[in-house]
Amino acid sequence: MNDLLPEESALWQYLESAVREVLAGYGYQEIRFPIVEQTELFKRSIGEVTDIVEKEMYTFNDRNGESLTMRPEGTASCVRACLQNSLLDNQQIQRLWYHGPMFRYERPQKGRLRQFHQIGVESFGVATPDVDAELILMTARLWKRLGISEYLTLELNSIGNLEARENYKVALVDYLSQHFEQLDEDSQRRLESNPLRILDSKSAQTQALLDQAPALADYLDDESSDHFDELRGVLDAAGIGYSINPRLVRGLDYYSKTVFEWTTDQLGAQGTVCAGGRYDGLVAQLGGKPTPAIGFAMGLERLSLIVQVLNKVPDSINNNPDVYFVVAGDKAKAAAFQLSEQLRDKIPSLKLQLHCGGGSFKSQFKKADKSGASIALIIGDNEAEQGVVNVKWLRNDIEQNTVNNGELADLLVAALN
Image (cartoon, rainbow, N blue to C red; front, side, top):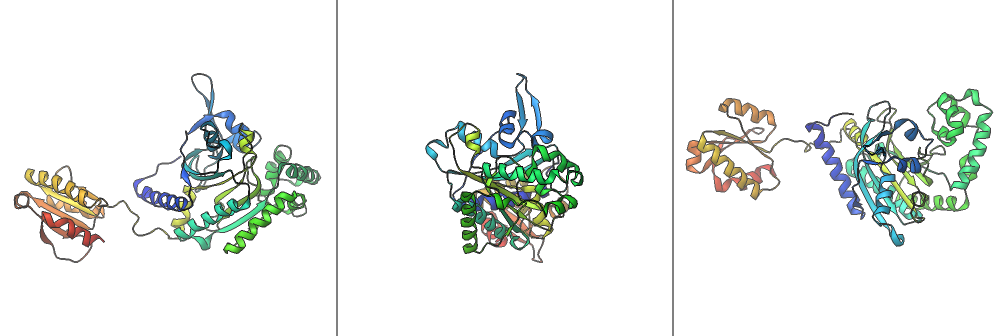
């Protein structure tokens, strides 16, 4: 787990703002829910034999002896919130999004921490593939907004319905059991507990074995196959490029039909930037009426990393003040506070830092320069009595001048725009 320092938070605010604008443009509304949930929620939704439930969850008993878990992902919490608050009654269509910290106990890696931050998007109540396409088009628009489209690749697959997956599991286990000794240790363990996860093994030897394994596509049910074909048709018409990855299965038990990932080769081994898929059975599994659903999640740490690696951070992204107020004298201090508040009233977006703590003009100017401000406003007792302020440009070769207090707001608006 790590701290997010002020110089980093400005970039995160920019990314969150971009996401918020794109999602609002598609009619998605924000939902917020607690960081902790009953442990059973995640066991029922994610699956008891997944790595998350078996190894990675932060689980504890509260003072009443109830088992609680710090959320390792957001979809289960979102479904629980919808059911508990009757958002899905009468097959209502819901377009929702959320953001915040998630927690998994795993080996920390670049862009992958034990407390990490996700933005999640969930759509409920639409069974047709047009909403699958909507989510993918929405992410594509976000990449375009951030200037990183050309560095991301969309991978697609369909994992079919539950019956199709069970039939495929039987064939896959039968094949891999004949080559058990050649599987990596993780895949040997997963062969009984979660064989589909072997498909995305990182072992080159296991991947070579899978080249001759039965293909999931050969076991797809007709409905899932038609759904996938229609989705591809929409993406083709919209000009969204993609590749079919037959080994893309996603790691959670609740997925069905469409699964997708946006990946990049700019971040080394940690190449997944955004991932998701359909989970049409999860709402009923958690006690609601059968409700089609699809969603995705993206990690803010990864998104921040790729924007920085690709030098796509706008120059305007910083926490620097626009204006730094240099003050000397008791009358000047009172006048500076009054004038600062008047400026904030007239220019709500103005970032103004008033020097506090005293000090000489020289030391204050050093702090003004170090702050990154574009302009220093200078006021002493004489200026306070005269109702004027001295304006000094810190980043441009413009001569210092003196301005009446009443004219200062107009000067700053012109200078900073």
